[in-house]
Image (cartoon, rainbow, N blue to C red; front, side, top):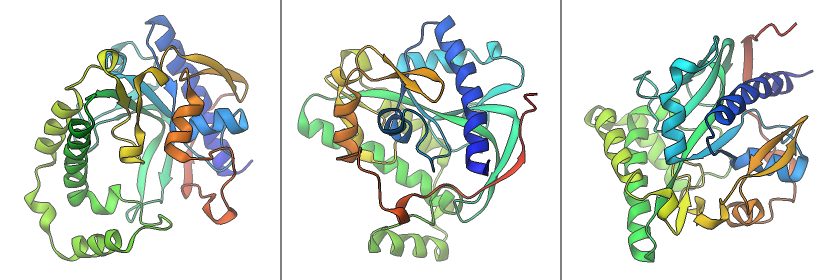
Length: 275
């Protein structure tokens, strides 16, 4: 069993714990991102994928974060509220007994094996207001990345536009990151993200996701979670998962070419003893 598969199996155990907490507290959640492609195309992990992405409507996300005292022993949450060096506005549900080193970014990062937990937020119905709302969020995302260029930006990303490469090179030379208050930017971004209630909005999406504007979809596509098989369990997916995936990825059922089937470069330090 290779390292990616070993990490996937550890993530399955974390997912079971997460699902149990959500079931006890009746929290809504969905598989999203690459994990949702995995459900629909592979009925499990994308073979080279090495993380699980979860989306939760904002109210459910906030409730899950508030339950940290009830998490089982050995599990925890990494978020900016309890870990200031975690400079993101989403969270990771972690297995404290499983540790890896991720070599994706310029500086290696030691961390616990995780599930990514993203809030799903509402957006304005008006197209122009929605456009400005998304750009407002993206502005803060870019500002946060500036002082974190070595730890938040995937330096191995294939097909990055030339202007992004140029900006990355300049940020290595010009220390403008010292002028940015990450805490203030994260707080301001939170205020913008929370402006529109998920349940009352016509549009909603993961505004912290990799695909930026393309993650904005019709709110009704999320709907009541449906059950579908994933590995050896059943998981929640959006009511119109196919429409969401096609909006973000296009023909997601087509496998990418070989060179684009890229995993994080992972070194396993220790995994939970499940024997």
